[in-house]
Structure formats: structure tokens, C-alpha cells
Amino acid sequence: MATETREIREQYNPANTSECIGKIELHTVEETEAKIEASGKAFGEWSRMSSVARGEILHKMADLLIEHMEPLAELASKEMGKTVPEMIGEVKRGASILRYFAQEGMRAAGEVLPSVSEEKMLFTKRVPLGVVAIITPWNFPIAIPLWKIAPALVYGNTVVWKPSIEVALTGQYIADLFLKAGLPEHVLNIVQGRGSKLGTVLIKSPIVKAISFTGSNAVGQQILNEAGPLNKKIQLELGGKNAAIILADADLELAARLTIEGAMKQTGQRCTATSRVYIEASVYDEAVEKLIKYAKQIKVGETMGPLASRQQFESVMEHIARAKAQGAKCIFGGKPVAELSHGYYVEPTLFVDVAHEMDLAREEVFGPVLAIFKVADYEEAIRLANDSEFGLSASIYTANIQKAFDFIERSEVGLVQINDETGGAEPQAPFGGMKNSSTGFREQGQAAKEFFTVLKTVTINGIRYKKS
Image (cartoon, rainbow, N blue to C red; front, side, top):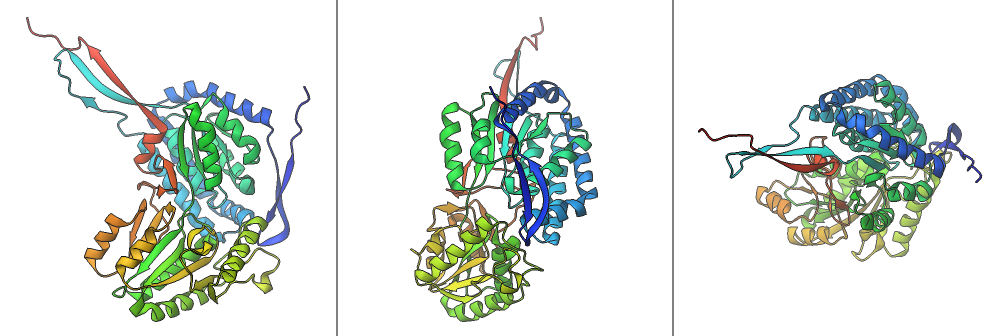
């Protein structure tokens, strides 16, 4: 049987599409299968290592990440387009994630339970799953892989990781740093290639016990269809169409600034980006003026980078064209940046007169586009905010404590923000959504333990004896 030839892929800078920043060799199906098998063989020794010792390796990795912060941020910026300051922030976030999960190695891995019998000891013990497949997207090429890899490793699993092909060089840099941190060979194996080719290999391998995926709903559904019947543990983080509500009693300056930040940071390429904003009618005109004011302050090419790829650029421009064709009114932006035509730059874009049945109100754009709605009151705002197939994040701007707590209860999302933008979650906090935004287990914080371990219940008989 002939051996498959490796494909070599060139990576180009989305800020300057003529600049090739490097090449990456893509793995074949056979190489991917071999890496899965190697991870399976490495599991025994790694899982028997003290969790404290595993945590120490994560501490060293965090130190290395900070040590390599500037070159890693510059590489990742050139590979997917975020500004260098945004990437430096992501490197720091990655280090925080590693340090949090490093400390998890010091935590109890079970609990002692009371038994009805004096002669029995009853306790639980958390144990690793085995080989975990981790499939990550291009929009957070450092943070998202680390918030999956770190808990997987500290709880004793081995990992086969497939980063998005769009950020293959960044992924390789991170994998190399793990080896420098002292991670034993094959405990983390990186495979480079297209998900359509290598994803099925990971999903269907009998050696792989669990799959953690962040990406599109279409691919997530495919994973669910293929892995579900194989009785694998599945964790899916998918899309969002996140809403903000601005009430009449809100600090409008704060609300407008944070809504624009939530919509435009990372060029809107976040599953938690603010995509819709509902403004109470009595302050609508004033709030819209402030939204435009803060959108104007964004310096495309400096404080906001390009879209990550030609495919993403074309997708966002198609969403904008469709919104206009369906009758929405563009009041700011809406075009490529002419003076930055060497890259995939799009203006911050604001739409009004958006009907709730329009695609712009319902589909994830994944770009710097915000749909603005006028509502009569809070009740209309929360009804429309909840009228979505997605349920990842939502925010409300108000000085009314009763409405804030009502919003916490009634908002159909996994992440609720009060007087803050829709994005972001600290490493110690669970991350995930409702409806079609998530399937399975939450990520980050203590919730990560639920996915990356399984509980054993242990009974020891005859451990206590009655006095004669």
C-alpha cells in the first residue's frame, strides 16, 4: 500500500495577504492514527504520575508562555489577524488558565462518604478518561486550546490536539513549549490538517474516549452524529448571537462604550461578541449617537485588526450585503477599508431598522457588525433577546436592581453580564451556553473536572471491627 504524501501549506498574513509567514507540513491519516496510538501508550505512565507533579509541569508551561509572550503574540497576530496587544492579552490569559489548573493538581480527587455499616469504608475517586481529542478554532489560537488542554492534562489524560489549520504555526509553537516545560513525549500530540480529513479519524478511533470541540454548529452536529453512537464523552462549544439590553435608567456612556467594545473587539470574531442591542425607546436616539461616537474611535489597522481569512472576509461582506438587501439601514461602516486593501479589513458596522425575522437578527456573523433595535420597554427587550436559537451570553445595562436580578433569572443564556459587555469569562468560572450554543459539559473552573474525569465509587469491607 502506497504511503500518503504530506501536503505542505503556506500561511499568509491576513493584514498583508502577500506576506507568507511560514510553512507547515500537514499530517496524513496514517500519521494521525499513529499519534493517537502513541497517546494511548503514554496514558498509563502519565495517569499514574502524581497530580501535583502534573500541575508543576503546567506551572512551568505558564512561565514559558510569559517568557515567549512577545514572539508568540507576534506570530499569532500575523497568522490570524488580531492586533499584537490583543494577542499579548490572550497569552496572559493562557498563562492564568495554566496556573489555575496547575493548582487543581493539589485538590482532592474524591470524597469520603458515610456508610450504613460500621465495617465499611465508602469513598469516591476521580480518575482520568484516557486519550482525549481536542479540536480548536482559529479565533482564540492560544486561550481556547489551553483551557481544554490544561485540565485534560492535570487530571491525568493524554491529548491528541488538532488546532485549526488557519493557526497551525501558532499551534506548533505551543506544542513545542509544552515539551520544553517537561511534558513527557506523546502525552500531548499535535496533528495538523483539515478537519474534514483528520477530524473523523479522531472521532472514530476506538482509542479516543472523549472529544472536546469549539467551532461551528454544523461541524458540532457532525461530531455529535458520529461520536454519539460510539458512546464517547462529548463537549461542544458552538455559536452565539449575543444580545445586550440598554434601559432608560442605564449609564448610557458606559453602555454605549462597552456595547461597541463587545461587538468590535477581536474584529467581532468571538462566539461571545455582542451581536444585537435592544435600546429602550425613550433613550434610543441618544444611545445610538453614543454608539456611533465610540465606533468612530476605532482605528482600523491599529486598534482593530483584519478578519482572519479571505473566507471570513467574504462571509462578513455577504452578511452585510444581505442585511441591506433585506431592508436594514447601515448607519455606520459597512465597507472594506479602501486604504487597507492589502488586508482583509472591514469597517465597524452598525445597522438599524432591523426586523427580527431578518438574517442579521438571527444568524451569527462573526465579524464587526452590530444590529440595533428600538424596544418599548424591558419586557419587549428580554422577549426579543431570548428569541434566538442560541443562548451563550447576554448583558443588561440598568441601575434597577430588581430588573437586573429578573434578567439573571429569565435570560436564556449560560453567561449573564450586568452592566458589562457580553464577552469574557475568568479561568475559575464555568463557561458555556444554552440552546444551540453548547452541548454537554461546561468548560473552565471546577466544571472542567466533570468532563475530563469519571467518578469511581469504592467500598472497602472489614476495615472497622466491633470490639469483642
